[in-house]
Structure formats: structure tokens, C-alpha cells
Image 1 (cartoon, rainbow, N blue to C red):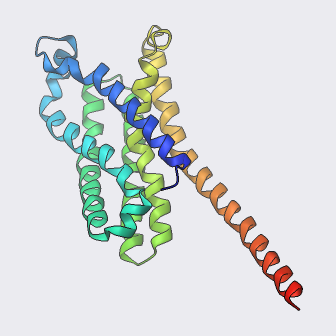
Image 2 (cartoon, helix red, strand yellow):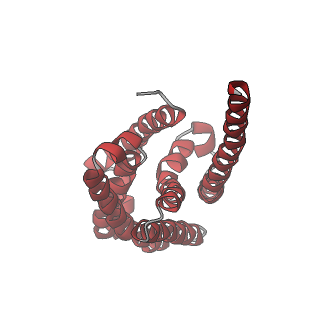
Length: 215
């Protein structure tokens, strides 16, 4: 198996995810901790949002495995359906959680993240049902970064210098990461498409040169 850039990225993202879970989720094991007291008003919403979001976050990387898609299409479809269920449950609940916990500026941010996550996932699902595999892959590539917002925003906010700036930094980081989730995937898809177009003429030119040499 070739060691590609995506393997490096997902390995690094996995380590970052473990760090975020350790810093932010371990305190919830203590019902007397400040973290637990803060989410007390939305604890029943978190029972749904947390596991569903974690399911989508942890399963999606396997969907980008070319080997898995080639060797076990059935497993690929099962994991894909579980991802869609995780998104369908976790995404909408983020809005009332943001509304209750605040600050108020996070409500529109949560709304944009929710709509983006649901829309990209729904389009990706539609594409695969219509038999358009390439578009399905591209839209799922756009979908997953909305789940990554959970990890990247919290990782940045764990930096002491950022955390010391208080609520303005919190709001700025969340909005910035959501903006990147909207923009970066389409940029990567466009760059990959341009690379493929450049490679195609090169192979065609090589074929012409080979044919001329044979003559």
C-alpha cells in the first residue's frame, strides 16, 4: 500500500482528535466538574448529539479508503449509512445547544455549520443513489470537514494564548474554522481536477511519441 498524503493527514487528525477528547471530554466523567455543570441544561440533547457526532467523526475516514471501497463495497455502504445517520442526528441538535449555552453569536455559526453539513451529506447521498460515483466522492469530501470543525476549533482554543483572549477569541475561532470547512474542500477538489487534466494530455503526447517511434 502506497503511503499517501491522505494517510499522513488522517493519522495526524486522529492524534489531534484524541488530544481534544482527552482535554474536553474527560472532565465530563466527573459530575461535579465545571464542564459538567455547564452542559447540565442541555444534558439530554448532548446524549443524542455527542454519540451521533462521534460516530460520524470516527467513521468517515474509513470512507476515504480506496482499499476498503475496492475490497468490501458492502462494508463501505454500511459505514456510509451510519455516517449519514450520525449527521442527521448530530447536526440539527447543535443549534438548540448553541442557543441554550451561548454565546449568542454562536447560534448563526451553528446554523451555518448544520446547514452545510446536512446539505453536503444529502447531495452526496443523492449522487450515489443516482449512480454518480465521482460527484458522490466530491460531495462527501465537502461533508466531512463540517464534522472536523469540532476537533480543529477545540484544538485551537486549547492553546493557552488563544484561550486567554476569552469570548471574542472563542467566537472568532469557531467562525474561522467553519469558513475554512466551506471553502477548503472545493479548493482541493479543483486542484485535483486541474492536476488530472494536466496529466491526461501528457499521457496522450507520450502515446503519440511512442507510435511515431514504432513507425
